[in-house]
Image (cartoon, rainbow, N blue to C red; front, side, top):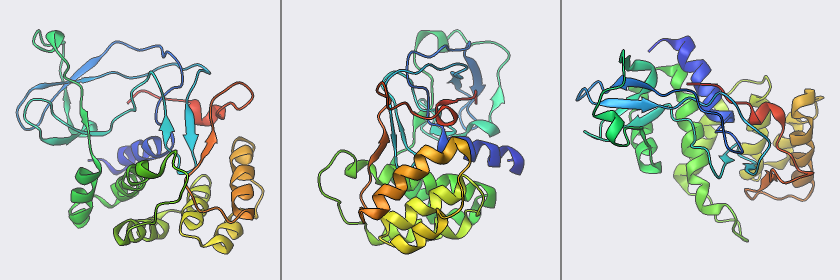
Amino acid sequence: MPSEQVERSAEKGAGSDGADAPSEQAASVYRQCASCGAPIEVRPTLAHSNGPGALWSDGYRETRDAAEPTLLGRCRVCGAIGCLLDLVEMESAPELALKGDYTFVPLTLSDYASLLESVEDIAEQFHPYLRIKYWQLSNHRRRGTDGAEPLTDVERANMVDLLGILGDEEPHRLVKAEIHRQLEQFEQAESLLTESAAPELASMTERLRRLLAERNAGIVQLFTGAPGDEIPEFVRRTEST
């Protein structure tokens, strides 16, 4: 797997999880499962609009009518885990694929946990993507709840490992501040937000500062996508896989 492709895909997977409103879809392309040869449909999103959706403090995008772009997934025929970057593109849509759903099955929290158990065998450039996805999926049980459910030891260990591999440039610094906040390491989080934020990150940075001032360590919605509370443009932007 080419490292530069992994880096670009990891960044997209960590920070752009779909569009907010009915999305303009390009024509599907089909790739071939490396294990069984079955077709895998890829539906790239080329456009977006300002419709409903939510952005959570861990960067997870919650959308109502657009599927999350999936870099990793399971083949619907044989169940093997694959990466879209490794799959050979088919020249035309197979007749079989036109009669059913052959999109990737998104990986579960358990799937990412299994991959992280053998992370030493996976290209180093791919580690941030795996750890961010595990972090976001493990936060699902806390979304929309009144109380902050305690982090497990495994979740804490993953977050600490993620802190160690993310850089200090934006937007990584913002992600690291959020991790420190959820770990109740408020001073460390505040120190990462002392520098002036880039214009496209300013509104998110300000909302994190408010949570830090409140000593709030819970997972919260930063933007709802409602009128007057628009998700920032750079977050809404999506690219084809």
